[in-house]
Amino acid sequence: MEYLFTERAHLMCPQMHFGLVLTSFRPYDEARIRDTLARLSAAHPFLRALLGYEEDRNAYSYRVTDGAKAELLPQGRIIADADDPVIMQAYQALTNRDWDLFSEGMLKLAVWPMQSGTCFLMVFHHLLADGRGALGLAMELAECYASGKQPKAVQERLIASVKEFPASSRLPLISRFLVKRANRVQEKERKRVTYREYHAFAEDFLRQNPVAHTVKRTGREDTDEILRQCRAHGVTVNDWLLARMMREENTAKVIMACDLRGRLACWSEGALGNYSMAFSVEVRKQEPDVFSLAKQVHEQVLRRLKDPAALYLVLQCYANLDPAVLDAACIACRGGYPSRAGKFVGSMFFGFASAAGYSVTNLGKIESESIASAYFIPPASPAIRKTLGVLTVNGVMTACTSERQA
Image (cartoon, rainbow, N blue to C red; front, side, top):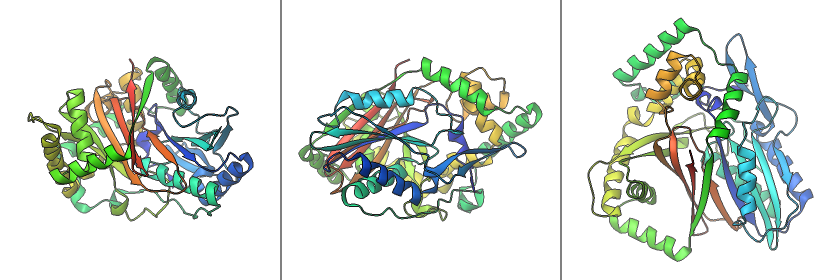
């Protein structure tokens, strides 16, 4: 059984949903879709899992069952393409409520017949996977549906201990002090948010904090030009995306998602779960153009990637904080829950006191014969005002923003 360890930070945090929209040239075939989902569920235990809880340990787990828990939602209306507004309407309907993971699976799959193929909307709870894991599952789905390729069976194994992090990634002195302080306060308070308390808070939070989504595509020629310019200036597309957001939003700091799969021994190729983290990139120096700014971003990112203490900082905080503090962090900041430890950590560490941040998650680029087009709908963390999610498929870069309206 896999227990929530660093994933605990995603458990009692509202709006921990994100989506992937993909189209296939294969004509709509509901029986084949059901068979594809059944094959995926057989290969991935987490697609058969509900949330489990052990009260004596205050421990949550992935309770794998005998049957598939992913929910298939066939849509009768024929659509022309992935730009049809009905897709985003369906995403809003599925994410405007907090899922009860004790009785609902962590994936919902809405499907539409198209005039020239099939359109899939995959809506994930963050406990099921991070963005890269979700993209891998989407590619498996597309290949199985298009050609019958059997999904590879993978036994998910999550981060279970700080011992899985490099020794050089230990928390810096001031961070250790603050974590120990929060844990001591928690020990005195003995506050424990129940899942039902969180669930009621999350439902209210979702009603009061709407999120809008916009999608913008960049064609092959323009995408190639962006790649050429990035190479000419010695930066990555990710650097350029962060720099562009800094200029467009007039902000000096942007949060960047970072994949750690290649650095974690517990990860197996194709496994679901969370193997990524995020760190902030801050550039206060004014630069004359976006590529000059991107160079500054590039230098900062490289320094972070070479410094384990900086790279693993967020995960080390998750791992060293009392789980009850993580549970209380958001509800204490935004829901009035009486936990001084939770409010301190939620505001000081995670920025939950207000939605003021900006972030970028770039899932990279793929080439696929089974996917005609795709885009990524990023999650809307309570700490973030605007998130940019980017995915490049078959040379077309698509950016989707999730932006708070209140």
